[in-house]
Image (cartoon, rainbow, N blue to C red; front, side, top):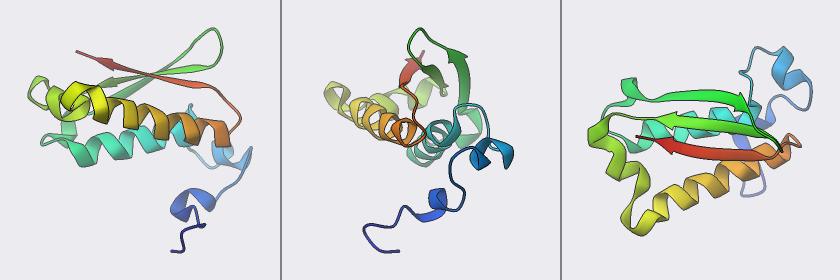
Length: 103
């Protein structure tokens, strides 16, 4: 994979993404699910819920209580990084995405 290559997310473009069986929330939800499962000790407890917000899509991330600190990080740095990456994935699909980490 080259630095300019988007990798596996580039396989399907635009409207084909939803038609290919990808969940509501598109790439953003997929990226959030991937990041969260890689960060936590209990990946089976990771759950992402999608809902409509005023200006876009809201993704609610649920993790096991013991993994909450890993997802938030010191001073919220990991959480902010996750939000930035997921927001960029949503922008690629042309939607505003908001990530809420639920306790």
